[in-house]
Length: 451
Image (cartoon, rainbow, N blue to C red; front, side, top):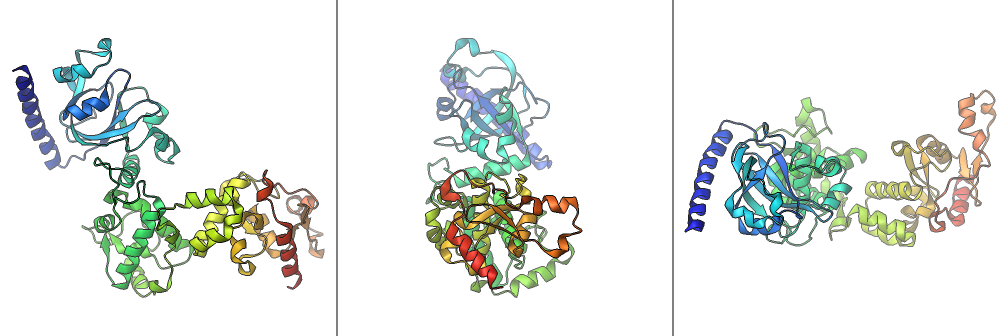
């Protein structure tokens, strides 16, 4: 009888709360996202999520900002913690007693506070395992800055729009509540795999002289529509770097018919001519630049493979194929093995560092193009001097400066970055397998001597 009464009370509370949620939604109030944290040492959160569809959650801060209709990620604290579920907030936080049906899930009776500021949460989706783990967040360039990671004390944490989009992207690339991936075939879908799929969809749209909405593209590649912009950013960068027509201009907002604010590859006041340039380009002649990811391999995987085993460079290059992508991978490898430091001057600003080929790209064989032993990490200035032949490196790894008569009136600054380095030992990787190969240095010298 008591169980039936509790069930009736719970249903009545939910019905009343739904009316408030609907009122907020219809009035145009934008729902926010939150993280609600549970400590598994005090509360059996995973068992509670299996047994209950509604939870009353303590709110120890932001009570004046949390509102009905807002969404929440349910988070389990601790080193093995992460996002366990998604929920909707049904009412405004207020003083209320703990729900009787939740008392059995407390592991420590002294953890129970009978009267406290609480909000009612309807559990919408429960994941079989953490959909986003603490370790994933700490490794993510956006999520690592979240309050739940930096200052994890408390029960409630705000989630910004960018953070929520990043979380959604990870969740929609990982397991769903059914234990299957969003596509059912690759587990944690990589950024590059989504770019591979999106490239195919966009080039097909270009060939058919059509545009595609964010929602349509999201469905085509199997991700949440608000996370599409991350995938588009990868493709947009590739088109800009390779001086291709702005392919991502074809992805438009359903209401406005225009690209979103993240589109920067063409003049926003002349979208029509940008679309014409995309329609007029022969996309079928290009290899999908993300073809290496077709089997789920990520760019990170390839970088790690080259760092671990440089002798696989020819095999890896055969999988990458596209020059722009290959050069991006090569730079990442060189940044890692040179510890983000120019081999000539020691400058350690990553933004100013570039990967230089010892045997130039146009002369290089496939086995040399991604081989770290055929490269140096150099700052922009020394890269230009190296490519021009003004600077070089000997087979015993000493910096070479090729003097000219016009240096007599050079400033002290010029001398410091050029002549003064002559004969110095280059700053090379710690591991011998990554250092320049004498064979490649000799080949370079032969090429320069014939100019």
